[in-house]
Length: 196
Image 1: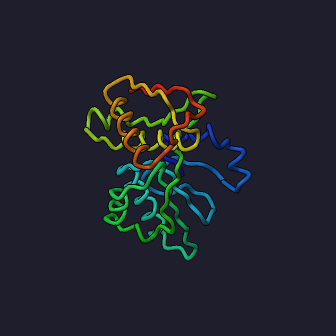
Image 2: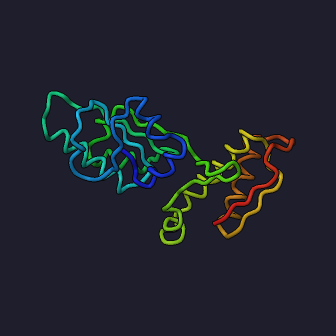
């Protein structure tokens, strides 16, 4: 079951045929209430850290448990790109944390659009930054930039267009210095433009 905001970006890296070849029966959006009526033993939730989605997942699990079947389902939860203590605490408060066999991370930070364009595809970033004042996505962006430099070497010219892009640039610079990412050698990427 997917966070609906991930359906499009995930299709850029895993086509439906690829998933079907790996025994994925069907992909459903995460919604509160009953689980979809399919005869499978394992349900995998893939989601961004989001409290509303944790409530929906808790609703799904409680609904399944109320049916009081001998044939219980196994639940797995993967956060993209990183786990959230706040979300885990929400699952605990809803009484379903112990019902989930595995809670882990799916560390996919960037989605490729073209040979020279990548995006985090984080639809809620604007609302989180400007409305809620939550800067978590800036940290995630900086981590993604560090990962990019670990893979392709140091990017000598990084330009930020916008107030938050400049913060990501500075944060990633600090992270790369602390982690020793990229060294002094120029990597395969000449320059990077970050836009709000």
